Image (cartoon, rainbow, N blue to C red):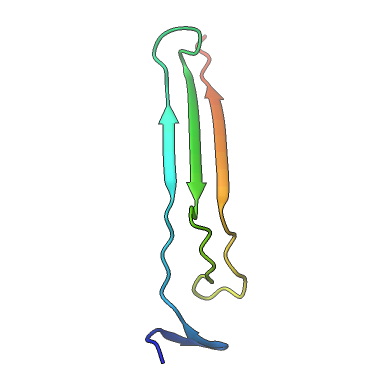
Length: 72
């Protein structure tokens, strides 16, 4: 028997996820004032259940954001 917290359907195993994040914000040129954000949550697609949750993890998630600041 492994160590962990006892829950309704057995023992909860320890888990860890790896997330990656990058951003780029040019300061000159036609893209000045633009910011690009990219992230990957749960890179290795770990299967886990968060504490006090009945649902399983979301799995690997990709995020991409493009933002532009307009000065007036």
